[in-house]
Each structure stands twice: as C-alpha cells, then as structure tokens.
Length: 415
Image (tube, rainbow, N blue to C red; front, side, top):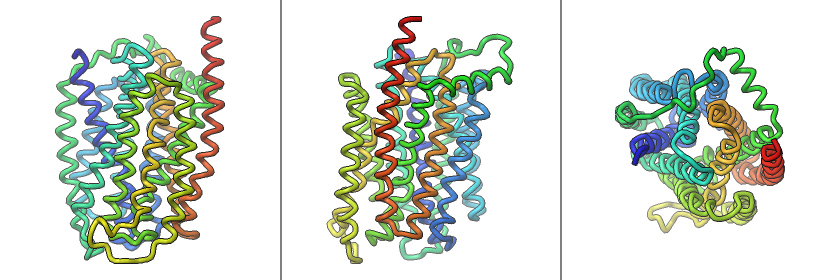
C-alpha cells in the first residue's frame, strides 16, 4: 500500500501517452484524407514523434535525476495538455506535426522517469519484471482506448470534415486530471539522487561509457529492432485495413485496436508467466509464433475483394487474424527492459532508461518511414511481409543479449 498512489499515477500516465503516441497511425490515415497528402508525406508524423523522443531523451537522460522523476512527469503532462487545447483551433498539418513533437518530448521525460520510478518502488528482480509488464500493458490499453475514442470523432462520409480535431479537447482534459493526481502522489527519490558535485559533462561521459558495455550494446540492438517491428505494423495497420482490406476509415481504426488489445492481454499474462519460466525461452517462442502469423495472415489479406461493410460479420477474416501478432510480440519489450535495468545499480537506471528511449524512438521512426515507403511503392502486403526481416534479426539479437547477460552475471559474481 506504501506506493499504491504513485503506481496508479504511473499507470494512468502511461495509458494517456499510449492514446496520444499511437494515435499516429490513425492521424496518418486522417492526414491522407483531410489534407490530401501522400502516404510517404503522412509518415513523417512518426518521425516528428520519435526523433523528438530520441533527441530529448539523449539530452536529459544523464541529468534527469537532478530535475526529479516526479517533476519531469509533471512537466510532460502539462506540455501535452496545452498542445491538445491549441491544435483544434489551428487545424493545420504543421500544428499536428508540432503536437506530435511536443508529445514525443514529453514522453521522453515520462518514460525515463517511469522506468526510474519502477526501480525505486520494487525490491526484487521478479517484482521489477512483473511491474514493468503491467505498466507496459497499460500503455497498450491506452492505445486500444485511443482507437475507440478517435474512431468516434471520424466522419466516414466527409473526408474534409474537421470533426476529428474535437477529440483533442477531451484528451487534453484527461492530461490535466492526470497532472492533478500525480501532484498529490508522494515519491521518495533519495535513492536515485546523483553523486554530490557530479557535473553535467561527467554525466554525459558516464552515459557514453555505459553505452560501450557489451551487455548494453546487445540490449539496444534488441530494443531498436523490437520497436521497429511494432511501430511499422501498428502505425500502418489502419491504412492497411483501409486500402488493402477495403474497410471504411472508422472501422479501419477500430479493427487496428485488436492489435492493441491483444498486446495488452499478452503483457498482462507475461507479468505472470515470466515469474515462472526463462525470459529467453519465452521471447524466442513468441518471435517464432509472430513470424508464422505473418506468413498465415498476409496471404489471406491478398484474397480480399472490395465489398460493402454493413455488419461486423462483413469484416474480412484477415482483419481479425493479423493484429493478433500483438499477443506474441507483447512480452518482448518489457522483459528486455527489465533485464537490462535489473543488471545495473539504481543510480544508473535514469541514464539507462534514456538510452532505452533513444534507441526505441529511432527504431520506431525508421520502421514507420520504411513501411510508408514500401506501402506507397510496392503495396501494403509487401510492406507487412517486410516485418519478417527484423523479426529474424531480433531472434539473433536476443540470443546475443542472453549470452552477454550470462557473461555479465559471471563477471559480477567474480568481482
């Protein structure tokens, strides 16, 4: 009960950023409809979000403990709330880009702070892995909620309708409520405070020195590849549903929510399963299952002719099958994050969290840009077949990460 209020606040923060960050797939579709931009032009929204996450994470990661985890989260929540209230009055494509940039910068503060906070409020490695999985599942619940919220405000009949901008007033109000809850939640950050007299320049040197560790290098490759896979699929799933499976825009967004819900379920279950079996065995099986699902679902989608969608029964079978890949991908990200953080002392968690966010953001941005390019020039089916390449690479990277983890534990026991 000691940390219940801060845990609830962290869950809500992650849920809200799940709504905003992964609305990029919905907004990519709406940008093509409302502004008339091409698929490749719309894909830059992912870059505005992810590159900002990466840059801000790199800048603040080494000294975020000086600011404080709680204060950093408050700044992030307030910034997004203000952006949400402004965008509906402007309605320009550049305003939407800037909102994603603000959201990305704020998420950098939130994610580093949340990962650091987990280390402060858990006492064992198993508790750390479990809480990490549950928190990441709330992120997916946020994504799922976002699909329902945004789809309600989309006008299928009028592509030029600005009704969908109204959703940002509602989301902005949620962020204000989250800010109030966080402000009244206590958090003891004394264990994460940096050494007295440590200079900013030395903090950056320490972060770069951390990045040179073989264990950390093998981890960041895994994180980069995972997010590349997840975002390349999630960000383009509404467009895939609309242009390949020929679903109406609002239903395309709703059906993409299946991936978010299956991922949330997968992460909830992972919080239980990973207490009992090897994380490496679990994640390897999940990758094999993910590859098999791609090979099964995409051929089904290729045989889907255009037809009217009047009832849920009219939705093609492939629209229900392919998003289930989220269930199998679900345990990977929280598990590898927890493993790397558990291998480091708590006063390095903030710095390591920054590196996690940086390389995750780079992976997400590159994945969306590549998928957007392939989607525009070669079609949606080819774009999603592309995911088999990073899935295979991630399986190899996980093997190396597991070997580096074993070597690190051996060296730690001997020192």
